[in-house]
Image 1 (spheres, rainbow, N blue to C red):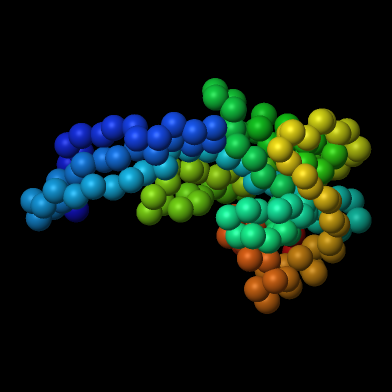
Image 2 (image 1 turned 30 degrees about the horizontal axis):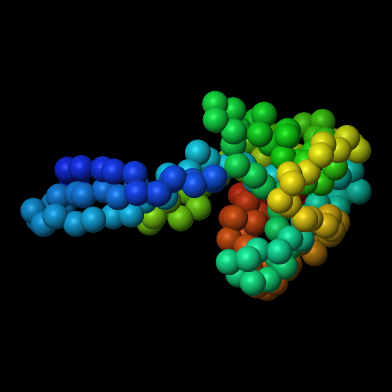
Length: 175
C-alpha cells in the first residue's frame, strides 16, 4: 500500500511537540489530510532495586484529570541519545541512579497520529543520586514489589499505556 506525500506543513509549534498536516495520495488515488504530532522521542524506565522493588512515580495528568501511577519516563533533548536521557530521567524522577541500564525494546506510543518512539530501559544497581526535578513536575515516588506491579498491570490497575507496554517488554527480564 503506497501512500504518496503531496505536501506537508507545520501548523503548530509547541514546547514538547509540533503538529504537522500532511496531504497524502492514497493507493486508490484519493487525497486525504493527516494531522501528525512530531515528537523527538522519549524513554521509559523499569527501575528495580536489589530488594525486588520497582520504582514508580505518581503524578497529576491534566488530560486524564487524575493522579496516575506510572513508570518514570521523559522526553529526549535535541541530539540526546536515549541512553543518556534514561540516565538523566531516572535521577530526576526517582532520585536514584542506575548502575546498569539495558535497552530492552522500543515502541511507538500512538502511531496513528504521533512519531513518538519510546525506548524502554531496565534499570538495576540503583543508588541514591538525585538530580533536580523539572520545574513543572510534581511527583511522588512509590516502590512496589515486582510481582505486585506485574499483577497490577494484568488486573487493569495501571491505566498508563506506556507503563503497561514497558512492563510487558520487561516481564521476561523480571521473573
